[in-house]
Image (tube, rainbow, N blue to C red; front, side, top):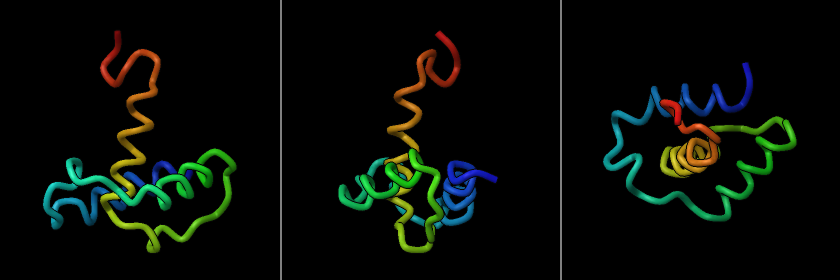
Length: 72
């Protein structure tokens, strides 16, 4: 299982219990760290990152998909 899948699983587990998961911004410095870990493939302890930071990273990734989530 790769790190992106772990991020999605954490969002699935903790997201419904948090308010405005996809609206509240994540911590910018932690987002940069998490993105760096995703790009380099390093191991990371997901428990150190908030659900809001994780959702911000996932949104950023989805925005960069060339054909979008549902296609062109």
